[in-house]
Each structure stands twice: as C-alpha cells, then as structure tokens.
Length: 492
Image (tube, rainbow, N blue to C red):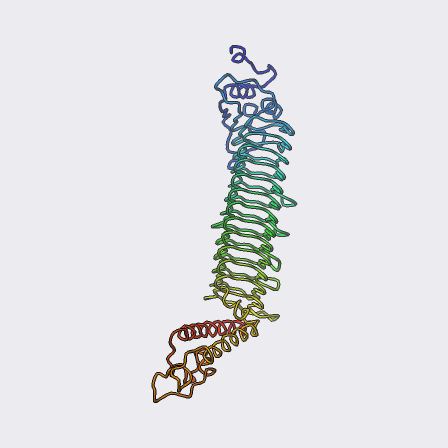
C-alpha cells in the first residue's frame, strides 16, 4: 500500500505533467485553467508552459501509468491544457480518458485501439484518426472544433457517439467518416456544422440518429452519404436541418421513423434526397421542408404513411418526385405540396389513401403533373374486382357469374308462387309484369337502372337470401368499377 502511495513522477517531467501524474494516481480531475479553445481561441504559445503537456506523457499514463491505490478509479481527466505533439495510442488497450477545453497540436492517433470511455469535449483538433476503434462505452466529441477529418470507419462503439454542437471542416474530402461503424447507442449530431462529406455508408446505429439544427455543406456532391445504413430506431431532424448538397440514403433501413421536418436541402438540378430502395418501418415525414433538386423514392418500402405536406420542391432536373413502384402500407399525403415538375407514382402501391388536398402540382413542358400509371390506391376490393381499372374482363366475368347463377336459380330452384303461375309471388296480384327470371336477376344486379322487376316480386325462403346477395353484390361491383374507372381516366 505504501509503495503505491509513494509513487513519484519522473524527475524530467514538467510541473503540469507532474500534477497530471498526481491527479491520475488519485483518480481525480486536473484543471490547468486554460480557456475554452472553441469559444476563445488562443495561439499555441499563449498557453505557456504552465498549461502545456506533452502527448507522450499522456500516452505513458494511458498505457503504462502508475497503479492507483484501492478505491481510486483508473482514468485520466484533463481540462484546459495544450497537448504538444502527437498522441499516438494506436493498437493499444487504453484506460478511460476525457479531455475538456484542450487544444491539440496534432491529430490524435487511435487506430485499432481498445478503450472503455473516450472523450474530447469542447476541444480543438486538427483531425483525428480512430479507424477500427473499439470502445466498450460512449465516445464524446461534442462541442469541439475539428479542422481536418475525423476518420472512424469500421469502428465499434458500445454506447452513444456524441458529435452534437461540433464544427468539423475538411472541404476537400470526407469530414466525418463512420462508414461501416457499429454504434450500439445513439448517434447525436444535433446542431453540428460539417463542411465536407459526412460518410455513413453501411453504418449500423442501434438507437436514434439525431440531426436537428445540423448544418451540412458539400455543394459539389452529397453532403450526407448513408447508403445501406441501418438505424434501429428513428432518423430525426425536427427543426433547422440545413444541407447544402445532396442526401443519399439509398438502400437504407430505418426501423422507426424518418423525420426531415422543416428541413432545407439544396442540390439544384440534381438529386437532392435519394431514398431509392430504402425501407422505413414507421413512416416518412418531410413536412414543410424546402427541397432544391429532386426527391427519389424509387422502389422504397415504407410502413404507416408518407407525408410531404407543405413541401416545396424547386429546381428539379426533370421529375420533382420519383416514387415509382414505391410501396406504402398506409396513406400518402401530398397536401400543400408545391412543385412545377412531375410527381411520378408509376406502379406505386398505396394501401390506404392518396391525398392531394391543397396541393399545387404544375406540369412541365415535357410531361404531366402527376404520373400514376399502373399505380393502385386503397384496399383489396378494387384489385379483386377490376384490377384497379386495368382488368375489366375480370369484373365482367364476376358480373356474368352472378347473373347467370341467379337467373338459373330463379328459373329452376325457386319455389313457384302457385301451381298455375310460374315464378315468385307478385307484390300486387293484379299489377305486375310477366315473370322473367333473367330480367329480375339483372334488375337486382344493376342498382342504378330500374327495369320494373325488383319491386314487383316478393321472394321467400332461400330466394330472399339470393336476392339480398345479388343486391349487395350489385352495389359493391358498381361502386368499385366507378371508382377504378374514374382513377384510370384521371391517369390518362
């Protein structure tokens, strides 16, 4: 016990480095009193020797530091310091560490490292290399300013990845690279500012992706590239998301909701939002967003509903919205949608309703405002009866089957009113047309035309049941055919 307590820092260490040794040995925080470098940036020389610590000293403590006395947590927590040199802890197992308000001279190197907790809060960094990193807890980078790339692809983070409020700039390439990274918690990027690519291809986030108030900029390409990413909860941006450049989420899977509400996405004359082949479990809502460029939902599968209420689409190349062969388990709401280019719903399958209330769709010189060729909307009745307007022979066959079957019943199966008169009993004995089972069956099946037979005869027993089936079937057939026909005419 006394040997542990009497451990001393090496003699050639500076005064602040010896303080860090003592704080590390005691499991406490060390605050050197430096300013917040993000809000009050200072030159490196302004920190002075009393607030400067060599990166090699930090690496020594994280990799081979003194053993703490019992009851003292093994961790390094440092605030308000300048870190001189390169912090190189790649391919090593690290103790937990957290830097706050620290200024790094060089990008930390954590490739293939293993740690329990990693924190760089309100720090300035010229980049960070952390590829294939394994962290069994959270990783904090919130509120930091990074002038270079954060490379964290193919990493494993067992907690949350916090990037909210940070400013990351690498205009000539990827600013944040988490391609193929697995995050067991949430990916928090609220109010982040990114200049350069945000790469999330094939990333897996078990929790939520949070982007409210984020500003992403890559005018020459896709600012957010998340094709084939998987989100276990929701992908949410409720207010203030501003993206200069496109968003590519082709083939992404979101188990919860994808919410881009009051967002601004600008990629003029190109694809602004790509969700081709995406699968979204609990609905897509882009309410009141402003999109410069086109929206693509080609072959996407969306549960619950799709809402584009109040969305304004401008500067689209040809189609404002390409949603051909999209499948929606609920309704599609286009109320208040404004665009001057085509909305393509060719071959789309919408289980419930398609609402265009107060929408403003204007056709371009090259095509119609709405293309819904071969699309179907509603339940299964129109599909079964008339193939959503494209299978009239099916409806005719059902009609003839009911008509011939009923006429045959009334001809040979119905009990005659009396031995002297064939057919059903008349409602009025002295005022009725000549009994004709074919005309009677036709009159029951066609509700919109009165042939004078339906009200003249009084069926009893099984004949009354047949009569009820014919009347109900006639109304169902008629209303279904009219609805499908009107939709087909609108498409043409």
